[in-house]
Image (cartoon, rainbow over all chains, first blue to last red; front, top):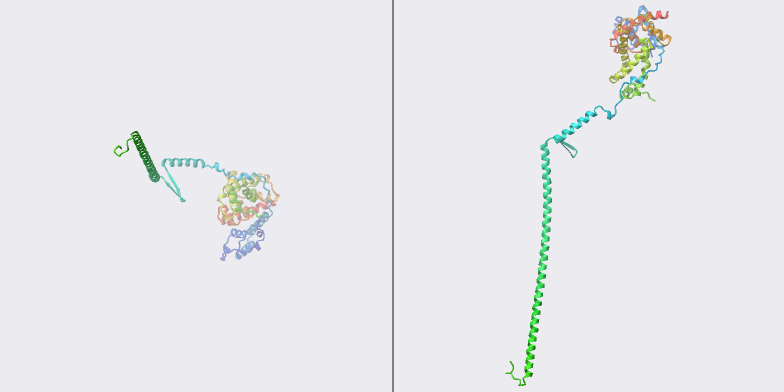
Length: 240
Length: 180
């Protein structure tokens, strides 16, 4: 709303420190009127203003016109705004969706190129204990392979050594078992043979004894027969 | 409900919030429309000017610095849009040049739909050069200080005061004729 103080210039409070050097007489009508309209007159300027309103007809007419204008501005009835397309002034384009982002094809291409470069150059990305290392050198890669091969070979050697040891132990145990079994077999077989040999010997001896007994029996029988067949007195010379 | 400040609405509008922009627009459209009426003297021109002003304001919204008032910034843009508007309508006429006489251009009165008291003042203002009319408009209706007016118009304070002084001289005569 327009400033109502303008309608009564004499009551305008002095609140300006500007041009307070006692040279208000040098202030032009335009400046003085401007200061009054801005409600920015100091005491001396206000006195000068009032003095000019009395003594300077053209200046007082200017002040009067300003007052009239101010009153008209105060009583001015604002016209209603007709309907208009307010939304048309919102010229910002709608934010594109993330998949409609202009940079997506470029990003896609860049990622593809990056992937190709990675494949061709043999980039090696290692993430270990929260640290990431990217290597581009094949030499490093070969060293890594050598290290891995050596590690695997050592592991394989250890494994083979272990298997070999187990195999050797197993063979040793088996050999021991076999030797034991052979010994037992030999002992058993030897015992059996000796038993059989003794049995044969005993049988032979028994047969010999039996033969001997038969022989002696027959001799005795013969003797008996001879004794009984010849009635000659038995003498020692008759015995053959 | 607490009314959001201009700065809050501007931030939201810059983020793409259409409602915030419309709220801001509705807050000032009446002032700008009536500014346009007093500056152009026609309802249609005032409406066109208002639309141009708000489109321009929206486009430059990101450059607004909150160290000054939005209203002052808005009227600064309105002033430059108004100058461009005049240059399009009357390309041969300078800002300090006297406009054509009202009697030779009766469209001012015919095309103005407003209260009778307003109409007389507007008709009188139409006979001032644009530069003087702007100072009268910003001083009495916009209630800006001369420093603000000078900043908005890109001139010195003394120039603004001189223009008003001359404008008051003319308006005194014009209004005496109008009210006679």
